[in-house]
Image (cartoon, one colour):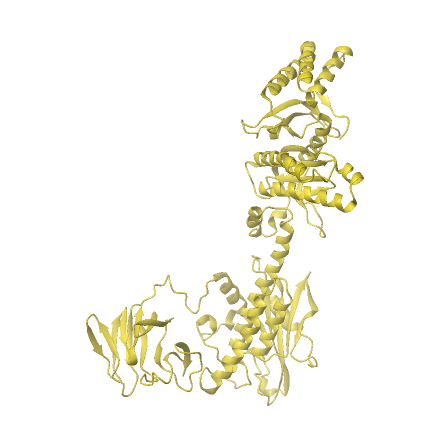
Length: 638
């Protein structure tokens, strides 16, 4: 139910609860901020609606409200003499006399002394997150898993209060005092001090050691622990790192963390304590012991519940000390909550490192999809991809004519611009080799239009040349140009790097052929070449022309080579005449007209490299005919 408090018609506060609650004025036992505020007294929820002073006529105990079933409440006048308590029903009012109670269906409006009013309404189950739930069910499930039977009926998960479950009186810890009387102020103070440690820690950068320091300080302060330690689990062994040990006193005389306790966590996957309920020797029979708790840090993304480590804490107990000899249920749950939070923190650190790595290779769209998959996408698979190789022309000139720093800046800037083109097209930056960029589409996320995406990137790179040449026109003595090779086909894709260096990309013939095709751009004097498998993906309104059938160095078979043409390069007459001449050339009997047509093209388009190559091939076959003529052009180098 929801309770809304008004004063002279203005809303001054509200609370939600599903349990019995008392309303009244503050008295000396109510420790809290300015009214209204919620507290507990004598084990019951109490809403302090007014401070002392101007509202003295409001009794300390005005009324009690108790839910009955799902839609009714019982309102009781719990004061000995106050008669100023009313239920309003339309235009009429019903008085509730001292000691009396009435039941009503929600919503209900109450009138209290001094102009205070309370409206009580039903909260539908879909609106209410009870005290035994949080907004993060995965967090709760993880917490319940590691606590197991340690979750008691009065625990935080069950809506209980911060009170000791052990029945033993102890020193100043949050979990050893009742929420009432003089102890409540100290209790609240200690808990707030702990929160002051934890909250700033949560605001630290994700890989900051201050987070663990804040958690450790909170545990030592709240639970009066002498030591807090994070012990990690790596390659089947417990790893003790000095930087993960936090001591209340630098001179603390403590035994090594209990191996039996750690192994118990390892075998059960649950929080373990010493002593626990199964101990044959009770704490009362010992003169001194080391009370300890170990809680598992479980990978929240692992389906098998992989153990990343343990949050370990202990304190020295001696006969007659005011410390708790055992770990209380509330202490177990407090540690459990911090453990799950720390496990998520460790996992986030891992994800942050992965994210930093992935940002070097993938677009944000691809990264968002990958983070939910963990490392599974790194596993090798055979799939169809499109690859792009882009070589920056003129790097040798740059190194010869520019100072080293200026040359490196120019190369870095150019590669950065090219990389941005790849990422904008949701491609993968596979690698940089000197002045060459290697990119891929079609993995790790399947993309039916990967060929078109690669083509779109290549066209954007050709436009980029104008921007870069304008940017560096007063700094370099040559024109910036690119040689781009595209190919589409099956490849083996995965992490092709090592344990030391991540590298996600493809391997196989498709990659090798794409690289060879890029190398041919210089021989054919064009910006972009592609295999027929990629050319099939070129939209009808994007100009292209088939140059020839070619055989590259080091690979069996041959491939149809196509030129992807930019707006500046596109010429419908050139494309049509060239294709006409190529068709003649591929029929040996038409070699003479083919040579004549290519000659005309060279005269009209003297900068067109493909026309010049085909003219030379035609004339060569006419002058020095080869008996077993093949129209396939064979590359002389990579």
